[in-house]
Picture 1 (spheres, one colour):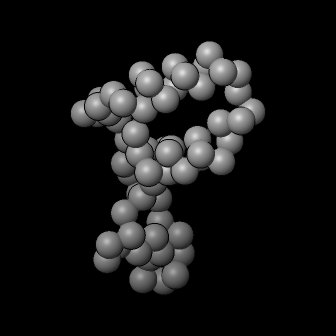
Picture 2 (cartoon, one colour; picture 1 turned 90 degrees about the vertical axis):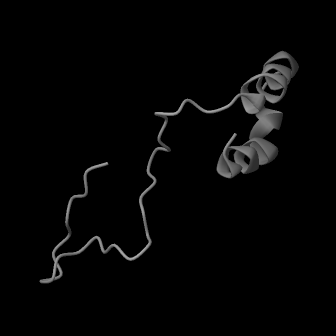
Length: 62
């Protein structure tokens, strides 16, 4: 499970029923992620700008 997912679950698990919490904690969070899985909303911040030389926003393909 990604660190963000663990942090979310720690803060919000109380909103779900006991059975679902046990399922998430004992099954889903222990699985290896699929090799093609990509986090939603994630982007590289290492040396890549999201603006063109003119300062215009640039769409970046994933």
